[in-house]
Length: 74
Image (cartoon, rainbow, N blue to C red):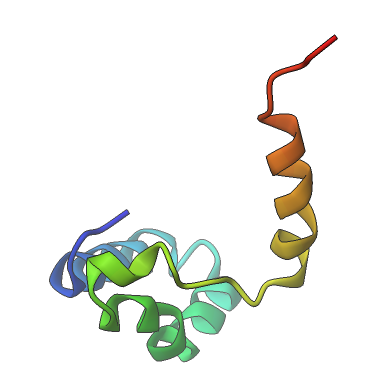
């Protein structure tokens, strides 16, 4: 994960170069929503841990992930 906007824009450009020809529809989809995808980097690093996802699939599995990481007690 990139730590600055400059790094993330560089990585996004590398993605477009590497996969743009091989997966044109996916690259077009991601490029179209680039501003929204990278909005996370508009916030300071300290705020990143407080930013929650709106992805419903991730939200469903968040509780599962929490339960799986707890030690088993007998």
